[in-house]
Length: 240
Image 1 (spheres, one colour):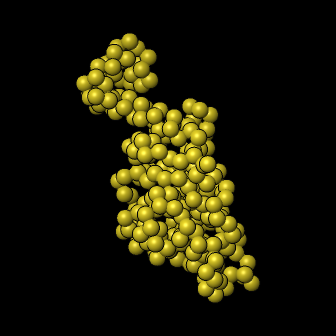
Image 2 (image 1 turned 180 degrees about the vertical axis):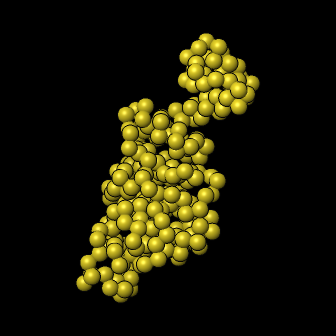
Image 3 (image 1 turned 120 degrees about the vertical axis):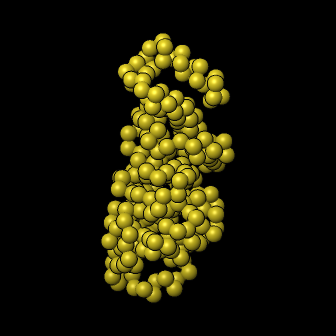
């Protein structure tokens, strides 16, 4: 059975930044987990966390992508929107091509109403202002009004994809914040969430000290006995 994201790990990932996660991933040798050129449609001030459900586009071919294809109940884009599991993030491989929309506000609204955790595309979304007002995190390259059929053909659901130069496998853990989106292999999720939580505590301590006027040398990273003792005292005081 495929590994599932636990509530404990999900809760930890809701409170760490993608920047910290990328450093935690780098510590275990993964350097290319931040999806490139993908940004929030609108900042939500909270994290997006969920396992990946993927959709892959290939270049559209005119004889196969008339507007009538949407009448087919088996059209992969429509099926994907209805199948993406609750709590999952739909991740779309649009070949980094935002010249046509990966989806629009109606489909993203449907994902929201079905309880999906978010949607990510390395292409664009149409109806971006409406999507930005929805209560679901959405990430794309830039707004794009033309229908996907003018550039993209939905060809496969829930297989391995590339999104913004990052490999995404179904079930990988997707974390987004107001900065961007990173991908955590599911088998590393528990360990990365714990490490990033520890790193966040330390970085919060360092930030407080720097705001007091303290120099970073010896503090960040903590290489002096005083810095280590001060951090231990801070953790005891704050309960972190």
